[in-house]
Image (tube, rainbow, N blue to C red; front, side):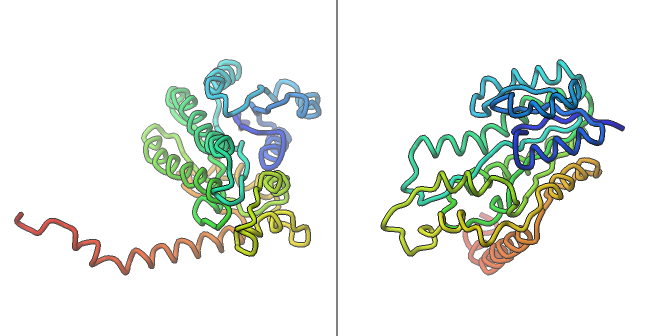
Length: 279
């Protein structure tokens, strides 16, 4: 049965691939872009099955207007995908205030606002699915990505809690954690990276070189990732987290193993701060 999807950031990357695959199989897509003309080819091909709206996700007042318009025009929307986002890398102290706020607003606050705007509709229709595109960096942090990780760890905390809140209304929530994919992510991120002489020769200092390294392209296939995300929407109950890419699995498994080990050795010292029985 054909479904209707709402996806932010459909002009490129996973958003574009998802949109193309969904339309090809007969679904409808409500997509947001910053410039409508970049979707002219798909619009001409699929016409009414592709509903488009201009949206800068950092314009928080516009988010509910766009979500309301999408539900008002298309009726039931089965799946809401928070896809729009980008990477910001470089020494934490070198980032401008504007860069800090824009990263957090785009990657964290915007997905929260999209979900909040959609939830009343999903409750009223007695079900649906919310998908949040995070990254393995939402579980594992690396030097040079402090703000990017902050935005994704925050996103994961919000949608992890929402998973439990929304389940009562038959609304599933899935957090997607892709590894590196052959999209334009690295190129856009490398243009954001700042440099400071003090960090040369450190892990942070080499971040731009790693982002621009063409000799080791990402191993992730964005079309396969998009297909896996689409397939996840048909799983019941909703899978809370979906890891995509062997690199993502490796980073997350290592980070969680180390984190758990660090917690387990503190069992006794953690309990030492409890109030004594009988007091």
